[in-house]
Image 1 (cartoon, rainbow, N blue to C red):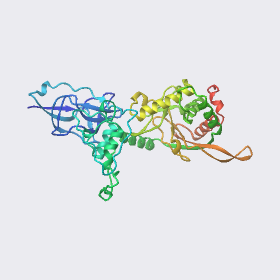
Image 2: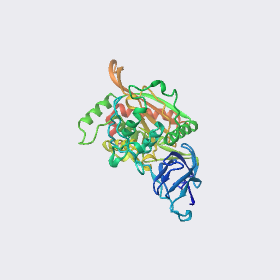
Image 3: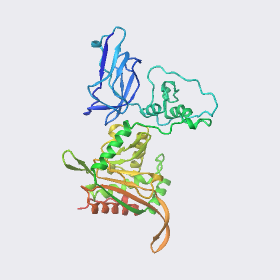
Image 4: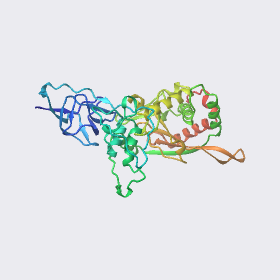
Length: 416
């Protein structure tokens, strides 16, 4: 028998290394050609790498969380059936990790004391998403014993949660005292990438924060009216598309906030088009899908695009093109928005606008105390390139549009 050394493949787009997210083969395992052996992550995407040959795994390089350089040995196979290493085929191209279906089946937890269903043992590749693999790995669940309820037997989130439940303290008769006092969770994959980018943005960008109170009573009335007369199948409007529409108007007068900073060249790239990033919370962490050329879209088109992109991001279906290229970002915590926040700029942008929770409270309005709907806008600007006065003036202009929402739909021209 001879050995075949498989090296970390070139994953394209200037990638020099990749992080090991999860191994799906270990020393001693017998694998077949094209079987998924490892999941890796670059700065661009998660990728599943298939085996280039059939054989027994002799050794692997790198634990989850460690990086392996392109061209370095990744895994060593002992070839079987008299195969020769020189005749080993080139590796099948790595492929992006498969996304999870958008409509997972609900989990069915068995009551304490009931007999679990008979375990299943899968042969070949287990079909599921990277997030599910990671969750199962952290919980010590062998996915080859989990029955999938998704299309074609695919394992969805509810299947993993149901498999974890008996060992996660959900049984009434569980021995709580036997549980560990602490749990260590290695920061890898997308969560590691988010942490690095957030740290870099906060470390390198001098943030200037500005919070302003906005009376959105009229905006709420308009929103309710539009929802009542919405086109069939249009979905319900939130504040977000209305804020995006207003922001498009404001940026005509404050183009210095629709800018990307190219640090390598020391150049500010000012954009005429408005590509709005929509910060979206997903099971895998924060993602920022992009509504491209928002200035060319109508209100219902923007609302539909926000819903479409958010859903694709949450179900891990968003393409790289849908997650890059924003020129300014809007973030909203919805009902959890609180009074104020300090959003971190999505580098290389220079501005981010945050929506806080809208609440009804008594305020002085036109000489009397009345109940109005109030919402704070929390914004951050790169103080190297956006002066405090301009930042405050921009938010004041945005406030004017939101407090007089009919003006959002009146065409304006760029100020001189």
